[in-house]
Image (cartoon, rainbow over the protein chains, first blue to last red):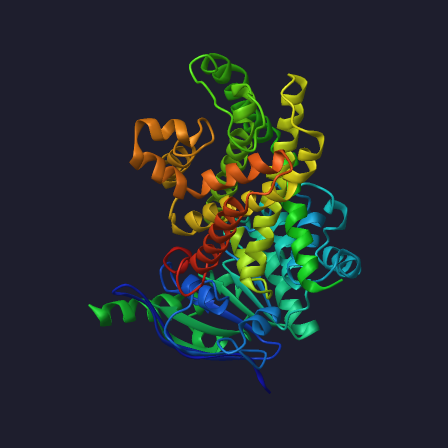
Length: 244
Length: 263
């Protein structure tokens, strides 16, 4: 199967501090890949590089077959992004936020109408479409952001700790929804998290620690008999000791 | 509709909505020049003699003299306030949405500038309307002729603000920049006193005033309000606009300006 997201030789430093060190992995089309790492592992830097918020040392990054460095705009057009920090305009309604986003991708309000209705319906947000985002709770805001990230029909969806600050039930609903996007619509997902309960056994897992990829396999293979969380803690703990 | 135009209209629409939602900002933007016009000018008119200088054909009141400067003041403060909101947007994350759009970044930033300039123009016209209620009026055609001058001034000062916002790491640092940019720019200009008056006190100061792009913007507005075209002021403002907008686009280049801050 072809890889929709491919990264190789990605390094990034802030001055002397190395945030990413020769990171590389591939995600096949329609796979849910969890990028698992403790705080400060380099997850947000990786997302910033993938979304071109920052650039740095040359690396080979391919999004749906498009070279990010050679054709960044085409690559961004194929990418849906949900940032860790909310990027919704609180004074606009959910619908207005979606119209605004569609326009930033060159989709007119008329053309976006059916897409917006479908995206809100998929996330069970139709009734709240005309509520101001400011009045919504964290879970609903996240749903609006996911609906928004899907409006331009991307092939790759990047979510950077999208469930931070949400209660367990909402986290579970959002995680299930994104898994369903992979299974039913063939979406390729890179899901950054430090919470192992958001990962299914068949999901691909890339463990990032101190800017390096420690392992890249299915969750069940990494978990073994110990369970994913124990394996994750053991791996990151061993790596930390190794660097001392 | 063209994708570029769709995005531009949406950005202008959002700027407009933001303006409507922040009525306090609108009132504050009007109170400032009105206090200068109705209080400061009233006290100052006796102290400051004005000679007949172009574009004026006759002696004018001090209130009439400072109208273009106060129009410039509205645009200057609005441009900087719009940049302040960009620093806030960046800290809060919503700027990321703009920066990860597949459309060219320069186009999106220019659209944002155009949107904030249009808001400034609306504020200036409301101010001119209130001034007219106090019998401080311009020739009727001047109200139309001044429109492009106001828009160009808005783009120039917005471009400067946008560039400054790309340099500022945190919202708290913006207050210092306001003091180091807004006040010198405003006071070292022809907004409140004619340059010949300034020349009587200091040759150095008047030179600084002349190269201050804000002076040129104010003079461009002053001439336009009397349906006259000041070539040098227009050229100076135009060049400054291009320079500031280019610097702003450079400032928001992913390889440079936002590099250390968004990671």
